[in-house]
Image 1 (tube, rainbow, N blue to C red):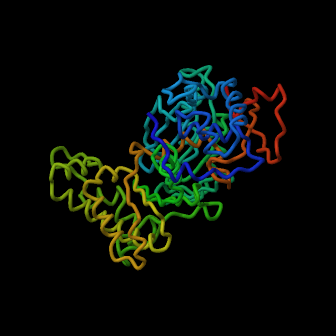
Image 2: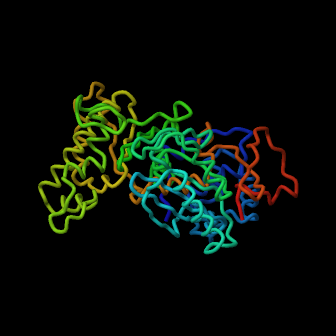
Image 3: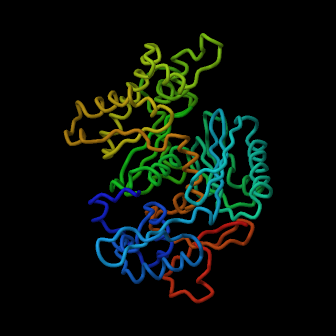
Length: 440
């Protein structure tokens, strides 16, 4: 059962621009709030019910959405609810991590139906070619005949989102890698590339409870092998320059502290990341010499092992120092912590909340919520496939749910430029034009 939107979310109409394609906006809302009735779409958008009905019928006719049986009625005709047709199009997602990389296929609802992990190793060109060849094999064999959309790629790096180039990834040792270009050359799919923290924040926005609660501003902290961050302002990712904000993982917490891969010392990343937690625990199991994962350490802490608990507390204390500075400067209403460390919320949650809500210069900042991510299992991978469903989430400067991006495919992944002008009533030939670019 869908969670009804909060009063604040229902009372705030979505900004409307004439040049936004109506069916695209409605598809966004149906995707995020399904199951949803036509009357609710009209209320959220401020569009006349007749306009909603016309465009919903187009989406139904083209197969992007489906209609469920009528629900309960409080009098009058029962409302019929709309859902996205997950089988209409499949999506590839790649999350390149420091130690391992995940490849996934998802349906149009971003439900992962196939996944595979492999070590991240070798020079970047060879590695990307290997991934691309695997994607091509899956597309031509196991999933032959399926319609595929964009390939979304998440990387632990600064990314030029206009060119899809990885600018610098200190933890990978990669620089100036044309990730988008190389994947396109092998797969012939349209490709989108973004930073892993941005991708994880996107997953939280689309698959968590943030939007339903009417929250449009938040700070997202991704704790993985490195430590990244994403800032959501007005319901969209704030990017700063074309290569992004750079993240807060390289804030100096302890001057002359441990050396970081960026060349500095005492960065937050070397004090609170997965790598830092494993190092602090001394990394080896007494039983078989196997290197413990952060999940292993969390499970030991949950069973009461003091050393594991102390390591996690220390990571939380260091993270809290950085977050207090960020909260003073940015004043986000919500801070979300994602990655494996979120599984230790029973231990770190009270520490972060106490540190962030006490001794603040501005008392109103004590109302800030600190929450664990709802998307626990590799959120940057979930974000990557979500990018594939809605590419404007990466490229658009507009709000992520109000974008004009009706694109056409040439069969090889190329797409036309987004149309900016007001679109007249569609002709009969346009009725079945694709809402998304896709490759069969």
